[in-house]
Amino acid sequence: MTTFLLVHGAWHGAWCWHKLTPLLEAAGARVLAPDLPSMGSDITPPGVITLDYWAKFIADLTAAQPEAVVLVAHSRGGIVASQAAELVPERIRRIVYVAAYLLPARATLAAEARRDVDSLIPSNMIPASSGLTCTVRAEAIRAAFYGECSDADAEFAMARLSPEPLKPLVTPLDLTPERFGRVPRTYVETTLDRVITPVAQRRMQEALPCDSVFRLATDHSPFLSQPESLARILSSI
Image (cartoon, rainbow, N blue to C red; front, side, top):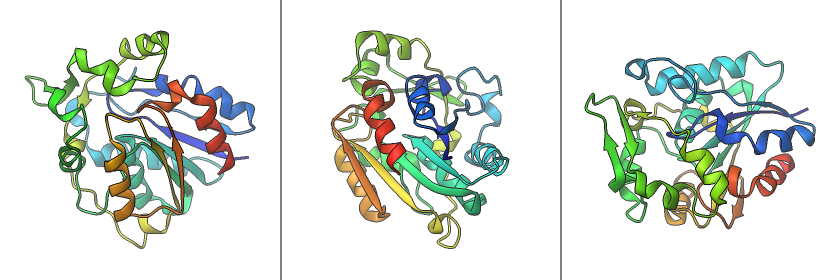
């Protein structure tokens, strides 16, 4: 039995997988879909959140499973999954980057996001006065994240977004070829994406090639807009 551990992206929580999880389970998989600390319904204060904090959370959950897991990382979840793989590579069967940041050692998400000049996100991020979190300008959210989703799914998601801790976004990844580099990688491209554009997704894959690549003609949120197609891809891996 395959165990999938789903790592949600920025501003999201475990709730974003609610359509995908039952499809994977129906195909015979075991699915873990946690809220990262300080996200979703988790009440951890954002001031304590770092990339290492999140990576250790995922690594500890991974290590507690009876078998090696497949990490499925969406968007910002990519840097969390990569850093977790550096900690427990022997417990991870594969990382699947779903429209996710796939970055090399010493890179930061913030720098890569700024390179993506056609993304709707960098210009619409609003830092909190505390300097600890950020949100996305309300009028940009639907077009950025949920452009191919139904109105009902978009409204469901937009009502549940939460502030994103800033520290992980500006933290350089601490990765080595001997640990992170030995974990097999798959990429799922979203070709209508306006958060991480197709150009950016392919640029990241050129820097860190994956041994399998799939493409979905959809927005940044295939777990809502095309959950059946995404489930088929994951179940085939």
